[in-house]
Length: 248
Image 1 (cartoon, helix red, strand yellow):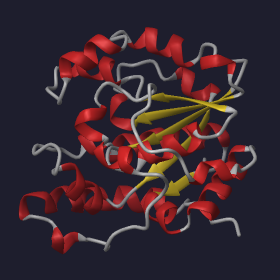
Image 2 (cartoon, helix red, strand yellow; image 1 turned 45 degrees about the horizontal axis):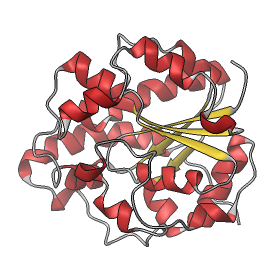
Image 3 (cartoon, rainbow, N blue to C red; image 1 turned 135 degrees about the horizontal axis):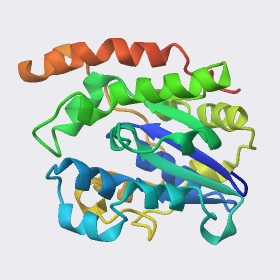
Image 4 (tube, rainbow, N blue to C red; image 1 turned 180 degrees about the vertical axis):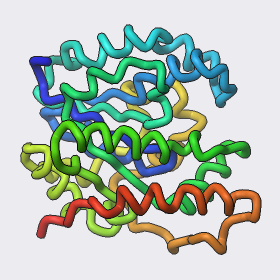
């Protein structure tokens, strides 16, 4: 695969993934794509998500067409192309060969925090829908090919130390850090998915990475979510072993 450096950032929902996309989009040398497999995922699963019909109309529903898109020329010919991907969108039947030709990184968040945030937007949730099993599967695929762990960043650490964490990520990706990644104008972007009205209210008000709120854990979960968090915790911890150190 030739052309720009394609950065595939793999996360689950409610992982500050959109704020990370803002940070990279604010670089003058970087284009971004927002969850390009979302419509293909909805079409294949039949799941009912907010704005389902709009999403299906806004993107290709054939995963092969999406692969051709994300491996094609970068928007505007940018030398860097940051692609925000949800791990649960990469269904087992979708071609994954393209993943071997991009720079993969992983954005993680404790499952307790993900679940507490997710159910504020959508009541029903499964472990697969927060993407942790798929994130581990994709991580293992990339690590096996590289012979080492690919870059992993943890969302709370990003909020606590944006400059240090993003500097470490950029170094691991082989690109320079840009101060522009730390601040961005508020509002919606043309590059945001059509689902932005349902999910992006917080990031649309943001102008940078805000300090994290109080850390919430297992005991803060309603009882119905505790089994999901317990099942997700070992998966999260496997990935957390490889979190990049911050760069001074």
